[in-house]
Image (cartoon, rainbow, N blue to C red; front, side, top):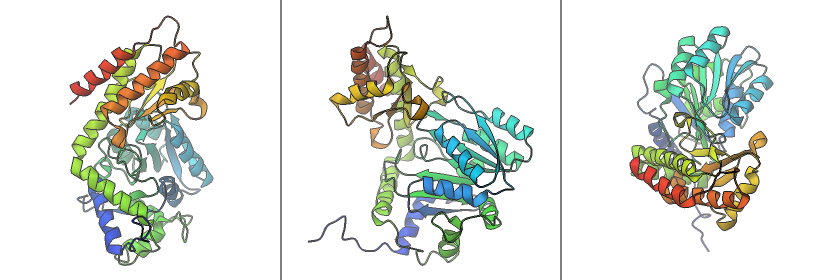
Amino acid sequence: MTHPLLDLTPMTAGRFAGVERKVAALLGLDAAAPGDPYELVIMQGEALLPLEGCIRGVAGPGTVALNIITGPYGQTFGDWLRDCGATVYDLAVPFDTAVTAEQVRAALAEQPDIDFVSLVHAEAATGNTNPVAAIGAAVREHGALLMLDAVASVGAEPLRPAEWGVDLCVIGAQKALGGPAGVSVAALSARAWERLGRNPRAPRHSYLSLLDWKQRWIDAGRTALPHAPAQLEMLALDACLERFSAEGPELVMARHARAAAATRAGVSALGGGITPFVTAARDAAPVATTLRVPEGVDAGELVAKALAGDSTLPLAAGGGALAREMVRVNHYGPLAAENVVRSCVAALGEALAETGGAPGSGVDVPAAEAAVSAAWGASR
């Protein structure tokens, strides 16, 4: 008995290369400047695979890195860089804001030997997003390589690695693109590939190795795959890219922006002492809105109460040190929809009313729902 998810014909090199071309078009790399061509590698694993592969590929004892921390992933990158023997300077900003190009320029001026900068575009875990275009200009002026984690931002907001001076750009499909988590992409500039090629510590004959893919796949003319690809994930990636293209990039990004604006508007009208965690709307990521619960309310307990009525709602408590004080509303991919946002805000309001919320601050769920609908319509 055949099964549509199991009895699949092997993925050909041509089909695999065709998916690569669609990813390149998504990132605007199909028309990258001839003087600095980009090559990308679709890696058969979640995005931590190419992120670690990029860092271990370029870093070593002679590397001097500026690691920008606006959330938990920036902390992880610093750990990897130090493990490679790099000298690391951390630029950390409060998680309820974004880093600025001026802060980056000041850090580069203070440590002129910096030759590598790591940055997260949008931090879904903390709900902020960083101005990559301005930061990229500062890093390129300094002469350093810039690595960007764009896993959460791709598809939800503009992402132009070549235009912005990003040398290593990592994306995944599982958030705004609404695709699989088990396949991801690293896109590298010519400068980045050159750096990998002369790093004696760059992984070779390893699952982390980007150079193996370049030698055996890109430089070999993309005629034979180095190993059997993750068939279902590749097909799902192809499908989500087709869906993204069919809806239209501008419409998908606008839908995510409406979801973020509507969530903030609904929470502001809700009352009960719950507020946006990221202070300024301009610093808020379009894929997820983080909220600060009132003093005396445990975020995990609040989320559990909200999910008791509908366990499918995309609500989660913060992680790590933020577990008790932060709630995250994940509105990405198909979840960037008015009904999803309205249901999340209403469920949080009902849970907050049950817990009592902030003293002297009432909860108004109907007002919050009306604010969500008004904001959604106003931002069309």
